[in-house]
Image (cartoon, rainbow, N blue to C red; front, side):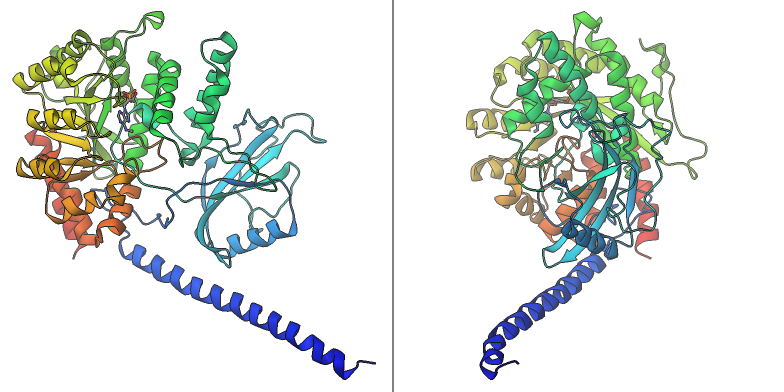
Length: 553
Ligand SMILES: CNc1ncnc2c1ncn2[C@@H]1O[C@H](COP(=O)(O)O)[C@@H](O)[C@H]1O
């Protein structure tokens, strides 16, 4: 028999549960409304087929600044519940190629099966997620399934992450909260998982780093953390892979050094170049200024010239889009094996991308080596090389070392862009501004008076929002944008920072408060600051003109 007293005792608990239930229901409702509002506003900016392409942001609904990968090692009810919600909220699941060849070495036995991007709204908050399926070998399936045994098909209609099929023992949830960066660098653009791990050079980087570690060339343990940014947390979330978060500047340069050891053979250089261009073209980028440091590597028979030939071969190897990179009169140049690739025919059917190259002088170089790069740039002027860049670890090297080469470049009419103010070295910042380069990049640590001079001299600024998060924090980027100072959005090292140009525009839209037309104008204005010749600039203007008609009819 239930006593009156007991009923009285149960009441507070009942109300508590009722209140909690109502809270969750209200939260979900509000989160859902906010999510769809956001989604609508982003969809207003959707310009997937935008001929000029720079603004393709439809797929980006990323609000957070960091990139996390959380992994569940169990097929618990909680995970299932989350998967259900993930599935429910993801009418537009995206399958990003098969990752089935990936083996993550630091997790022996795991093989990624597939990946898909999702959006989740729950009491945990509204987030963009992705699910990665991996296969374990550490179980009754002692043999690693061969490719044919593991079909590459996308998941069936069952909610993602729920089917614990023959080979599925783990479900990974990726809290994909990408963040922003800026201009394009070849090695920094090594493909990352989001582009398909079959091709991931990060994967190769790990493999090769292991080999080099075994050979005693590097200390594997030192670099593996930088490559994978491993963070071990307890419980069901046990890993973070390929995270872009928290990589410090010195770590970035450690990674660059590793890339250089790993990728500095002709074949890899060609491959990376091709992939970078394809990735940008896939984003509808119509003009790509790719910068790279010509490298010498005696053990591989590599000279700065042969390095550049490998880059040019990479440009030529692109077959998914038409690439225009060779200027007229190229036939007399020293690269006899390079055939000009241009897209005159079929342009309406195939995407076309203009690719131009900037040769970087690394801050570790000597004056003589910098001078060699300038001469090479002049030699390759008709092979898409349009200018020079000074980059590299900002705490290494002296401005005076590179000055003679840069002065020479100026004299022979090669445009120059400088990594300026990546660290607060005001003596150098002043000298760089006084040099009056055609553009500066990064500009994270400029003082008020330095900004004033940049503005007075109208030196265009390459804004790399992801890479230079300080520019957002200190409102510099928004400030210079608002006063109509010439700026160009760039990606810096898209692979390293897990970004894309679309992502940069998306970020700029939220940082600067841009609407679709503002973004269009911002993208178009970059034409004048590009180092392309007049002919290309006119072509680009035409593309934008056509796009304007389509976009703002
Ligand atoms: C964080 N922002 C940055 N600041 C300064 N230098 C950077 C950079 N990002 C890239 N590089 C420079 O570009 C090289 C990689 O491309 P390449 O091997 O030349 O194609 C790096 O080694 C570094 O020197």
